[in-house]
Image 1 (cartoon, rainbow, N blue to C red):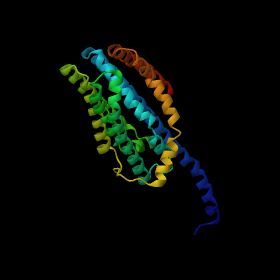
Image 2 (tube, one colour; image 1 turned 30 degrees about the vertical axis):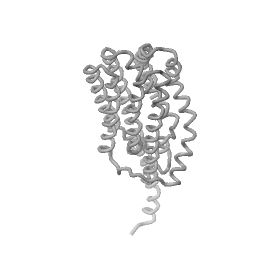
Image 3 (cartoon, rainbow, N blue to C red; image 1 turned 90 degrees about the horizontal axis):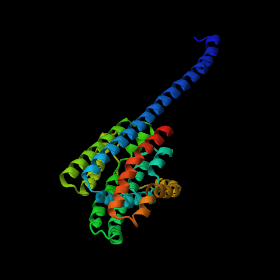
Image 4 (cartoon, rainbow, N blue to C red; image 1 turned 120 degrees about the vertical axis):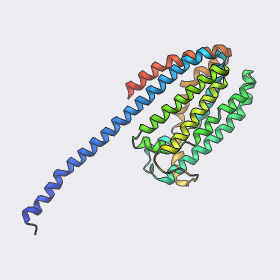
Length: 292
């Protein structure tokens, strides 16, 4: 039988245990935040080191014109992605429904439709762009290289779920593995063919490998195509606030190439692109680490 003194002690014990539970929970969250930040820094640093090393080797194997062509292709692909960005990843991170399978499937479905739509638009824009720059071979290069838009449209929302829960170990590993594979393919094909197609093939293979690794080896249910009206409205409503920032991001990242491509030769544009890429790596690393 519980005595009066025992009963009066129970609330006191519970009150004493509550701060300890909160402290333990905060400690676990702090460790997850530190681990997630470390994974982000490692992944970004490794990616930039690969980018720097790969471009140094490729600059020796390929003519500057190849980098000029890829600068034009990248400008179009990045522009299409940014100008159609609706912030699906950010929506999953912030939404109270961020772990709801229906919400996640809707986000994945919208991204899939967007990816294929952008690929079709890129294929249609290839002809006027090739005519404007008077480079007939640019048509096929754009149409093939822009397939990366469709490939990334299949990316599972498990990547965003991992970021939401600060479980970034596998995502970081798969990012690095896919970039290593892409770099090896680019260098091998550049040495063998000396063609701009080595850059296209490397990018597509890297994107395909990343998709395979993320789809097969991240925990969680697979996405399926379905669109719920309420979830779609939430995603699109949030996405409209992303538009202005993505326009500014495009002008910062690609504005120089957009202007220079109108009066530089393909060779000089390629030389500029190589120099810009090599010079930007330490700046990006410094900025990322100082902001981590």
